[in-house]
Length: 578
Image: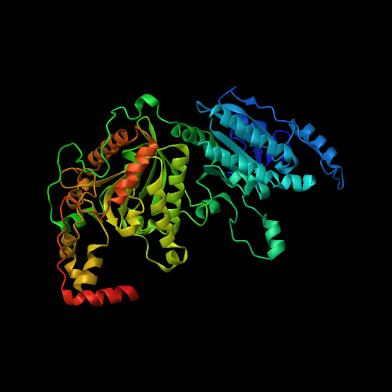
């Protein structure tokens, strides 16, 4: 960005922009939306509530441990950077109030030796973490860096271990950390504390990675794809939770901090009631489910007009903020999750997403998750446990995606890991089957303290069509298989699998979505009040005992499947070779 008087040449589009206009626009070009780099002072002024930032004192470090010199001595470079920026080094840390929530804030300045991380930056990050722990405050870090500072040699490299350990201590303390990655964030900063926040936000257009584009092309000679290492590419590959325009950073950070406030003690578990693990209890309210013909229930559960997970999140929960990605491969649209509130209670919500139109269904892969969908869900479960937030899962899937790529990326392991993890969580988990509950793909989100089933939903080891094709040798026997599988809400309740049946409006949830939203909200809120009180270890033990009893004699004995015996041996052999 070059300047002449009151006019500035945008480095993105080369347009001349009136300097006061650019300043009013938060240093974002009004012509091309290019986000110009900010100093630490400018960034702090844009983010925090007025006059609330208080700088933290950072212990002195060895300025020049190697007495390094290239074309200029390192000491001279430091002195020049300090004079130009008015900072001691590339990071400023302090306490602040952001959107009404107190926090600890750390901001890096690329204008100070490229925002490189030496011992002073490592000390600043550790100081910020220690202050957050001392005061039990959330931590917000804004990064802008070319990586580790070469002039400090291996001492700079070791700051990666130092700051990564500090972030691990934040996790152990159960305190929220948010990292905002701005242009550019590279090298040792990206490969340490910048990637270890509970929530990662990339600023619009930011260039983010480990090795820089020039290093990649010179080292391995690869042609770089369009948009490589830019913010939206990271979002697509599941590496960040969100990409935000600069003007949205302050309100989004304020929402994140507000959503993670825990409910006041007086509002948690106010009823003092607790249900014995594994004992079904029917939800209060009109329209209690009557026994229905199983196949009709399956058809209603699959009705395209039934409310989707996104609609429940928008209407039954308060202020849902979506988080994206598995931090390894991608962001699966078949699984949606994030943080929301139910009244005064902060919760993590995860659910399968379908859609109403063919285009919606294709976009969400018909609600059939890939491994990265389950790994995203697992990441959100761990997020909930670290921060002590209850979990609500919404289940509506035909099953996990049965494709070649899903198998190659470890579908079985992804499902197994999330089932194992959810069974051991120390925070409450409430699961609600809102539509289809198909096989292990559904069970992955259904291993919790309570299982609620909507009146016209179902939960089964296999689809009726799949069961009919295998055991009756024809998909036309699907209605017969549905009845034999005992998969309806009423059956599940009688079998002791479902703890509650949530009544639907007359004709089904699709006939009156607004009423269904309210019924689901009321049912989940009541269950959370039941199970959030009391000792967390006792609750976790009750969950283990509940799962341990699965398959033991239940209230009603299951009737045998009506299968021709001559097919049984052959089915077993075929199943083994399938």
